[in-house]
Image (tube, rainbow, N blue to C red):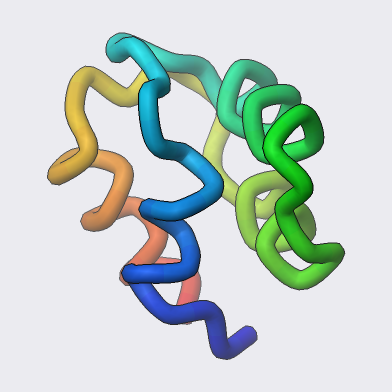
Length: 63
C-alpha cells in the first residue's frame, strides 16, 4: 500500500486522540478517504492510538 503521510493527514485532520482503529476507519469514511487508505486503517492492530505519532508508528509497521 502506498499512501503518503500527507494524504493520511488530510483524511484524519481534526480527529481527537486517543482513537481506536474503528474511530480511524469511521473518520476516514466520513472524510472521503480512498479505498486504499481505508484498507490500510482496517489493517491496523486493534486498540487505541494515543497520538498521531503512535498511529504513524503502527502504520509504518504495516509496510
